[in-house]
Amino acid sequence: MLDTGNTAWILTSTALVLFMTLPGLALFYAGLVKSKNILSVLMQCIAIACLASLIWLGVGYSMAFSDGSPWVGGLQKAFLSGVERDSLSGDIPETVFFMFQMTFAIITPALMVGAYVERIKFSAVLLFSGLWLIAVYAPVTHWIWGGGWLAEKGILDYAGGLVVHLTAGISALVLAAALGPRKGFPNQIDPPHNPALVMIGASMLWVGWFGFNAGSALAANEDAGMAMLVTHISAATASLVWMTIDWIKFGKPTLIGLVTGTIAGLASITPASGFVGPIGGLVIGLSAGIVCYILVSFIKTSLRIDDSLDVFAVHGAGGVLGIILVSFLADTRFGGVGYAEGMDSVSQLSVQGIGIAAVFAWSVIASIIIIIIVKATTGLRIDPSFEEEGLDISSHGETNYRP
Image (cartoon, rainbow, N blue to C red):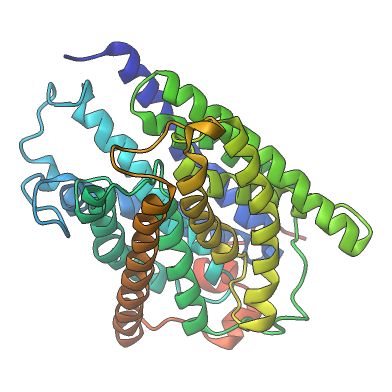
């Protein structure tokens, strides 16, 4: 039977999650790049949102949430075939569930924009994102949320540590490595051109994340309330930790550092948000502020990969961190919801590890294949002269700042 209260909450959550991408993520990334590339980032985010919406309608939703094999759903719900106005998913309209899940399919490839800003062809963005949604996102969603093989093993991923953050993080790293670094990397890259815009975008992400995590309860209930609470605690904790490390290291607390910590805390609590209590949120936020901070430097200086806006270090690593820690923090002794029958922290950690390995491997292999296809068709990187001119003018014929 339809529950109007739950329906109202998921309608609201759907709007909040879309708000995370448009305009939250778009503004967050746009403020971090050079002024001559701001419009290119905004264009990439909104174009991905439009493309992902149509792919989700056509085949993505059906591949993720229809009955099929343990690996991928069938196509019986392609273009929402058989879904009527009064069709239900649980106690909410299936159209509402479709839209809520669509907003996740939108933000996940949009997260990868941060890895390839300022040097990629716009046609490559569209082709890579479209193929990636079909080959990576939809199958992994089915594995974990659509009743697939990892769901059968009892994986805990409440709102997308693996489905969203690891898939996007590792694929972004592979794509950044294939593209090569920006000119001047790593020591001569210009600082963010508009930190205020970054803070505004991060704040929008923070607000929208309540829909992301608390909405994943798919009900207006106590699970949604706790998910919202721990999401906020983790974000606040990681923000202060990152700011403090910056303060100690450089002598001054930075706005960019603080809000980067915010996103790390939000990403890390995502898979655990419906399973842990306030202590869990605090521990995950503290861990995220330290671990993700260290990995930002490791990716750039040790691996020498220009993951420009730290997609893997913040989202990929943050998602994995939350996936691991929920194995322990879901324990009722720490205020969590407890384990499924026959499971404990060790057995749960084993399942979580299998999930991490499988999603990591599939994302890498599929991304490499997609990159080969993109290189053979549109090509990946823009001409060096266009890169020097800036993507706003060279790719889109527009500029945001006029003399």
